[in-house]
Image 1 (cartoon, rainbow, N blue to C red):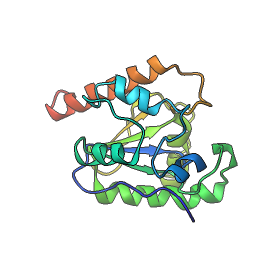
Image 2 (cartoon, one colour):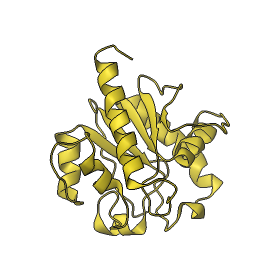
Image 3 (cartoon, rainbow, N blue to C red):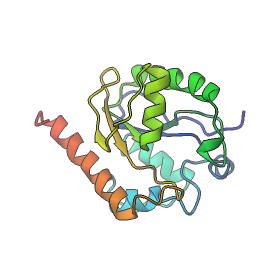
Image 4 (cartoon, rainbow, N blue to C red):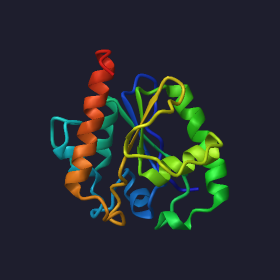
Length: 183
């Protein structure tokens, strides 16, 4: 299957977890490549990075090596829309994601979208939850805290770019509090 590679290693601050790659991203060779996706704009306006990054493979390497941000997906099969995914995709992908998080132990497992996290819970942890809030979650995955932000997809118009920036900054604040034992 032609898909995006994982950017994973030990010592990461965050692992960004999308629902699944889009064909646009797979063709471009990097995450969030759709020009309408708001990830890069929100990232650049947040405190997650201190320099402007253009959507590119080179920026992915900078995020991975300098900022210690990794990338993967709940499901590795590319689709135009998340609604094209099947239960079998989640049954295969969620346990694999859990193993990756347990192996690499980032400080924060960063789920893009409530639905992404709910699917993870159902298929990897055997938990059904209706009330998943945006922000830090009660359940840790191994040593990793879990933080959910809105999906930056253009299909998720419920949240504005300003909302995304706010939640990315909330995640930075949470990470700082945890680093200094203020959590």
